[in-house]
Length: 420
Image (cartoon, rainbow, N blue to C red; front, side, top):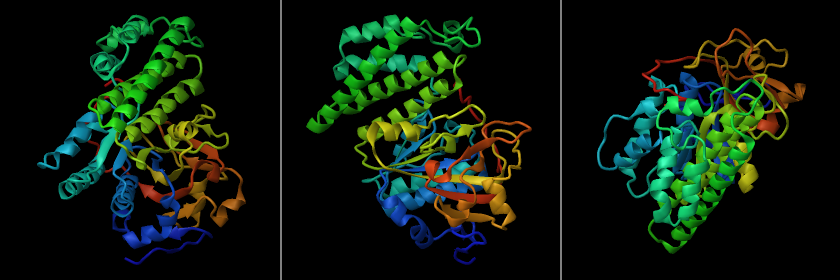
């Protein structure tokens, strides 16, 4: 296979090899200067479970670990659910064992090679291993409440605050999804799920807990005192619950606010995970909707101007994120049927019609001047209609990798995503 060459469209580099075969030198020529100053390098896939996207995702992560020294990998996966995979990866230093692939959302056979590579990397680099953790909010809420109560006092949280959280926060006494459902029953369309005073009371308590636990973790880290990790875990649980409660409180009244509460939690959790692990830099991998810069409005799937975890992370920290969208003209995955783009300003159709098969281009590529806004096919659920987002490319992504085709390899047994 030959090296990449300039493609048919100006500013586009066309690859002539499979994604997993791209040499380090070629990736460095395209990415080295772009990622060098970034605190977070974010990789956004246009649909979960599509094989070419996953193979490229794995290749990019390997490059960033090997050539740029990044060791913290943060995933679109909940903090507690992801602990199983995190602990498995840490255990690779001692012995190999089958990867718990089912921890991932919509797992496929194409996910396994990256996990196996990470395990082998840690076996070869026991003094500087890869750390893996999730940042999403779809955990069992009662497990986060239990974690707060069990770890809170040992890390110095005021017992009165813990008691008030137990008293005032919705769902605290639940231990099953049926009991959680009872908290939100009889909510009419257009209404918030919780009485406003009750919701704000719990929100203030959890926010105070998050701030207190985070500060405790930072101080313990600085003093090299025990308990720093547990303090950050309390903060992560408080942050995740804030996202979970906010999402469900707005679920029937405002799609945008509901979504944004989820992504605000993702941004906070990324911040907390970097602090916990003392990581000045991190890799983030998620659906492209969660890694967009969102510098200008865009209508995601007809819901409206949804904001991303990266957007909120940047707002909170002012850190620099370099993000890449992995997109395709045709990309079946683990989330249902794919609808082909037909819009006149379709980015994926433009590249396909020009003969591109597997390409890279930055958001300032010359051909993008044809339109101010481009339609990017962005499947997130099945449906017999065009599914995607119209956006100003440089306002949302720094670079793009494009495939004409990326298909589902083999879906593996999966756990429930939203109600684990």
